[in-house]
Length: 110
Image 1 (cartoon, helix red, strand yellow):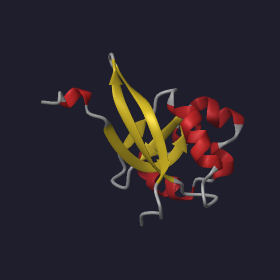
Image 2 (image 1 turned 90 degrees about the vertical axis):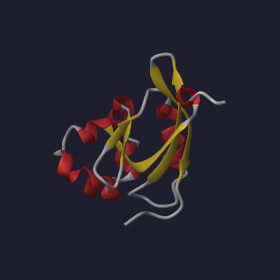
Image 3 (image 1 turned 90 degrees about the horizontal axis):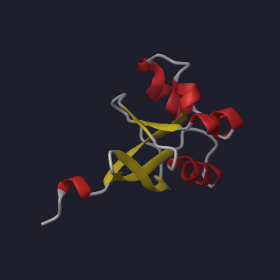
Image 4 (image 1 turned 135 degrees about the vertical axis):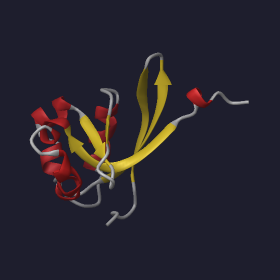
């Protein structure tokens, strides 16, 4: 039997850099995620701040530093210039969750 703590966690959401997350009230984050530009997310200070995924219900998942190069790669390959929706797979690594994969989700949720 598989230990549920060892199962990968899959989450999806609009990608926002943490620098931008800090600028806006929680109630604005879903709309900001829908509109967030790839150009902003790839600015030096934005990349350095790390990334989060904002879900449609307004909840947010902060990603670990291992996610940053994977998110950057996905953003560079994004088929549109804003509102990038990602799927992230994370696994437990000791006391923390570590990102193991990042993929662009086809289409954008409403």
